[in-house]
Image (tube, rainbow, N blue to C red; front, side):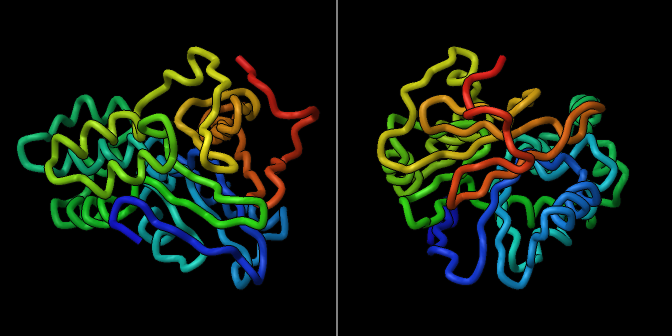
Length: 242
């Protein structure tokens, strides 16, 4: 397991789920988990990132990161939080406009604690399932395959090389904006968030599950990594939805 890509073996005790962007809605997420019978002693929850900003519970992020059954990748909002705390990169107006007031208002030691913990999150997670490997990133895979991306992370020797990869992983919307259905060839599925949708969608084998829980008419979508079925259920087979 590298610092950038974390690998998890199959869950032989319970179920594995991924959840869309959280954006400081941890209390709503807990209610959602309770309602679906999530068992923290057996089940695991994987997050596509954007744990913080916009919602009222962003300060609970460290508490959730510490839970042994909760595993998250970095999203672009983690990246913004880390960069805000980094000397020479502080732009409170830009970060506040993107939901960062919760962090701006904290003391410098508190800000640094959040930045350290958020920076320790991987950029990608891969989970073994009975039907093959499932990859999780915030926005999109960097490169033509999951394996190529993992190899690129393993070859990182400078901040410039890392930035070239994370620009795709944290920020890219090319796949969904172009309705690209080619998919990622060497994994069973890739789960992403980043772009809020009215309902979840799949392009090829890339599942977009951010249904905007932080927004007025949004809600959390979870996906069972064993079956690739969503909670709440999608009325028809997942397909591209504008």
